[in-house]
Length: 312
Image (cartoon, rainbow, N blue to C red; front, top):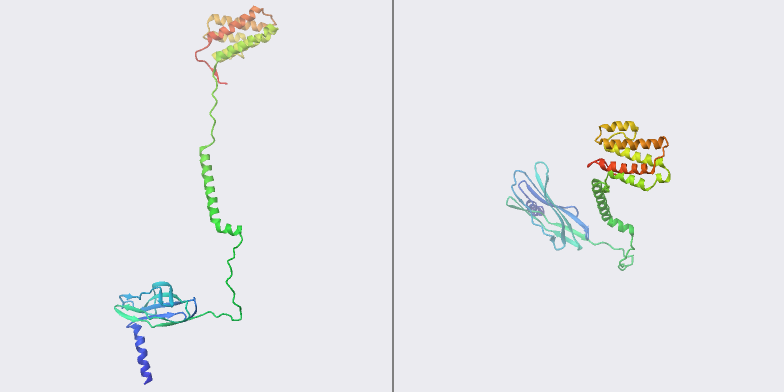
């Protein structure tokens, strides 16, 4: 009689958790924890893949009951089942901060409109045993640690890295900009352009003021005058006047723009200078003065409107 009664009591509990080929259940990885520890509760539904159209899971709040809290809810996930069954699993992480025996209530699943209910579970929450042989101690005061440069650098190294990288980027940009711009070239100093005839006239004026022949240096006086005249003719008419003899230069000047009178007077001046330089002739003061006057007049009369100039 007792066996029949026990069977009648157990059978309804078993049928509550299953219907046809669908089975629901709740498993705890442990039923005994210390206060504050966690326990994982796995909820699962096993069913034939083609026999179930919809499964409605129970709604779970932050607490299962006043003493059992829900720390984490993994959500529903479909995993491989046993044999031909499919399986959906949902894992809850539970904890409690009150000692005692606390019930995990049964959960109701609605499978294709049919309500299936899991069995209730029981969790025992134990306190932490204290060693009675040790004396109780008061809470210690807050300890302020001394400043540590190493710790401070470890905590703020990111900012130093950002600053160093910013400086490196800025230096690279400045280098590329300056390199692209190139060295600045100073503007050239404008030079004074002096015409050929003006240079020769200035040199003749300087020679005249030096009073060379008045000091007895007739050879030096005539040599410098003829050198200035020959240099003027060479640059003005593009003739090799400095390397030519007097006869060669007179011959070259026959096809020049000079007038016969200018060529004749120039020949007389050059030959007088040759006599002074090579034959040691002694010219008179009048001849020396006339030589300077002719040279200045010759340069002025033959100066071109546009002639080669010196840029130095």
